[in-house]
Structures are given as C-alpha cells and as structure tokens.
Amino acid sequence: MKFKNVIRRIVSIIAYPVPLNWWIKLSGINVIYPFYHTISDQAPAHVKHLYKVRTVNQFRRDLDFLVTHFKSIHSVPSNPLQNSHNSFFLSFDDGLAECFDIIAPILDEYNIKATFFVNTDYIDNKDLFYKYKASMIIDCLSVDDKYVNSTNDAIFTEGIKTKRQIIKKLRHLHYNERHLADTIANLLQIDFSELLMNRPVYMTGSQLEELISAGHTIAGHGKGHCLFSGIPYEKQTEEVADCLKYLESEYKVKDKLFAFPFTDDKLKTELFQQLKNQHVLEYSFGTAGIKKDAVPFNIQRIAIEKHAASAKRTIKTEYALYILKWIFNRHIIRRG
Picture (cartoon, one colour):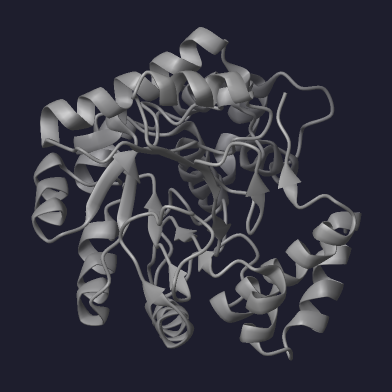
C-alpha cells in the first residue's frame, strides 16, 4: 500500500468519530463540492473494471448525510469556500446515461439541482472514452480466454503475457497509450459503435435538454476527456473554449463552468488567467478534495467514489486531511 494511502487510512480512523461541525469550524471552510460519475445497482461494463460503482441505496445514504449537514446550492458563492450556511455543490462527470435514468429522478426526490459536466464529443454516443473502452475489453477477457494471445500481441510490452497482466495493463492504460484500446478492440472484433447502439453509455442531446428544463446545469468537461497536462498549451485553451462554445451554441448554456478531465494537476496559472480574461469561463474545477487553490476561481472537488467509503467518512477524512496539510503548509495548490 502506498504511503499516501496509509496516511489517509489513519487519518480516516481518527476523523470519523469527531463531529463534522468541529472539522468545519476548525478549517474555516463550509462549502464543499462532492462529485460522482454514475450510480447503478449493477455496474455497467464500461466502468466496472475502473472503480467501484455506488449503488442506489449507497447514493441515497450519501444524500441523506449531505442534506442533514449541508444545504444544497446550485451556484458557486462569491467566496467559493465560504457561505452564510454550510453548503454543498453536487456535480457528476462524463455525462453518463445513468445521470438521466437513475440519478436525476433521485435528485428530484431530494429537491437537489446538480451540475452535469459533459464531454461534447460523446453526446448522443458518437464516440467512447478510451478508459471505458478498456473496461469493456477487460469484460470480454474476463469471460473468454481465447482473446488473451491476440491482446498480448497488441500491447507490445515485454513481460506482459498472462491474462492478469494484460488486464492490469488495460486498467491502468495511460492517456498516451489510448490508441491501444482501439487496436486491441479490432483484434478482438469488438465493435464499440454496435455496443453503444445496443446499450448507450452517454446521455443524448434531448436528455440534456430535459435536464436543463428541470433546472439542472449542463457544463463543460472537454471535448474528448483529454489529459490536459499531456497536450500543448494552445490545445488546452482550445479544448476549453471549443467545448463551452458548443454547449452554448447547441443547448443555450450560459453558465461558463468547466471541470478538467482526470485532474488539473500541473496546469499553470497562465492558462486559468487567459481563460478568465477572455471570458471563456467563470469557474473551473479540479479533483484534489478539500483544498485551496492559488487560482481563486478554480475550485477543488471531492471524489466520493474514489475510496469506496461513504460520503460521511470521505468528507470527514477530507476535512481532517486539510487540517493536516495546513499544519505543514500544504493546504494550498501552488502553480507555476
């Protein structure tokens, strides 16, 4: 186990019994930004080999905790981390089909309005994120050993021979290796277009319009879920601008909100300032948990799914980690 994970586990054990209000007062932060990707009682093939999917009952328990201790807000306060009352801003990444079929009806029960960050290239299931392709391939490998040799030929990595090694490689496929997902799929004769037609992964344009009509917000998550630190600066600015322009043009989206795919780590202040000065975005979002940012309009969110713990435990742990980082002056993301 990585040292960072060991620290997190210890902090989690210490933080959980402490009343939440104590952590809130000590930190001075009373606005949090929890986010998910999908909710389902049966994990879909495109995500079940990437992370543990929360069930409907788990999600309901998370919401019960959130609405008990925080008030749901649908817009970012002038000071993103402080408000007149404890608040939470709920969001969902990638625009997956379950957002419309499962999540939205539950949010209606709780009278919660959420923000859905979508990849514009994938609306209407026009294409598929390479990580989701990898998960689908793993699903095929899990049920049929005859594909193992063909898959190994495509990876071209010394020492990767067993099915277990191949699956591990696919599960941790790096952005710069994303082409391997299509190469392997071709060898296995997996037709992603056919799969998307039979079982849509993403929401359709008409579903996005229904969410907007219901009072939810649609916002940008990039065109094709790229790793921003892995593309040139010029492409970074284009990716944000083109995504948000498309949403405004097609769906009359006025909220200039953008959540960076994967992470906002290693992104420079210059990028944020240029996007802000050119009125491309109002607020952007990262995934570093409860943490301040050198860019005041870039807000860090809490990935509830990441550690497979309840929202109650995850949020208390994030608060305690923030205090620990504050002691060592590591509570602010500093950028070049």
